[in-house]
Image (tube, rainbow, N blue to C red; front, top):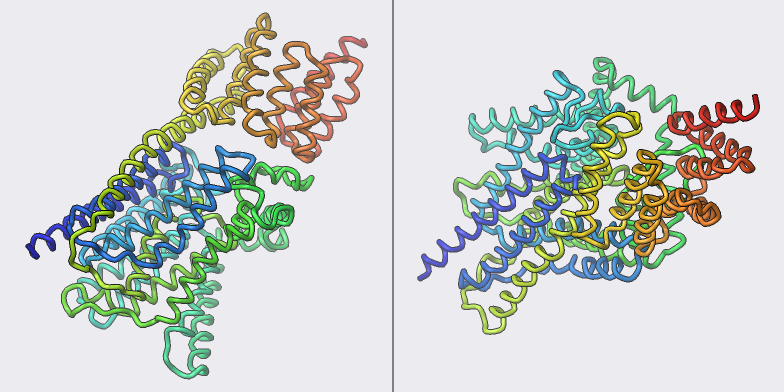
Length: 637
């Protein structure tokens, strides 16, 4: 009987490791999980993993004690869900943000409470090591063979052509991946008890990690790892403070020498350094940070709402900044902005409490000597902690918790580290009580229903919308007379109608469908009024869900203009301008609206002039200015 229970425990651990590994590899190799079609699979795999974990607690006939640290983050998930329901003005974005956090915390919970055999943990870490090798190959291919290449058939942005992002979308994400695991890999290579084969394998893997980290040319990643390595001796060494400080100075000196060597040998590093000097440091991030801070000051307790930063930033956009931030490029500030002090305490405050507990319980638990002894050396887990410290430091300048693959990797390593620092015992042999079994069954059924009725329609709708909008955004490159213009509109129209049918609460899908009808009006001028009416109706559906998005008001304004409702369109444009007073696109549409009447032509030209002052590269505004100039010349020869 006892042997059967042990056998079941092995099967459960192996099953969970397989699910976690498939999810991590899939998500990482699909641009880190950024795209909605990837998040659909990632989220469903996470739900399936949690369902298997819950079922195993009954099927194994072993009532394992749940680790108390796992409960620390439950209040934040509850609070974040309440924030989405009652606070955020953009609920469809809020639920996406909630699911990012849920994916992170569920992964942490399952590894902490379900992957408790040393052999299973070793296999999970081995998968991460193999993933690091794959990421190195992709980063090298991108750097030396095809700089524009990216996963999923996409092309790299011009600003990143000299830097490698590997399987991720941006180089800083790849840097975060490697700073998490590089210290631990090097410890495995240089530890005293390592065999010759282990030294060769882990040494080669460590070189790959450092090489890939260099290819990212991530100043924030390098600085974060350097800081963590310098702090390491202060806590790892049990010597006098003078010896520890001397070690810190020594590590810092080595880092400075390496930096000087890179500056001398690498033109890319020199270019990044000179760009930083010429721009007087980082200028774009402080703009985004100030916007996040202003949003937090406006709503200090509960924040401006989950997922609302990118939309509400428009009120605080400086005149000379026209990029779309999407996130604050500082996860701590972003959380304060979206969730307020309450959410920050429940999330990062909970993390801080776990760290403090870990510092008080710094003794790493030891397993019996055997073939898994290497994983249980205290120095290895100290290296894991150093990688996590570097990751946490880089969060001050990036948004890694918004990248699902990085969140999952951080959660896995965190859970394994907590198990070592705070062991609670593997099993308490006893049959599940009469209450536990029905509770688990109800929880599994609820998760299955949530995946089918909640996650699937949410991300399926968004994936259809996302692909359609990307295609629409390329139409400015083509003339209306080209066949590709009509074909793109037909395809986008079908996809967006499906998206709104699958999820009627996807406000952005309704707004994009309004855009499609506006473009149909340009393609078929005789039916412009009919298309304009549909465009206004779809935009109104979006506005019924949220009135804080400037684009939604613009979409309805265009629909009203197409019907000849000039005054109604002007009212909608005023709402858009109040929400985004320094956005060049808003001023373009204001110029377009005013250009429809000869009496307001001077105001139209003034609006377009201001649009081009905000964004001199706005090609559409340039073309409209030229067209208005030609029309004015024809009317006044």
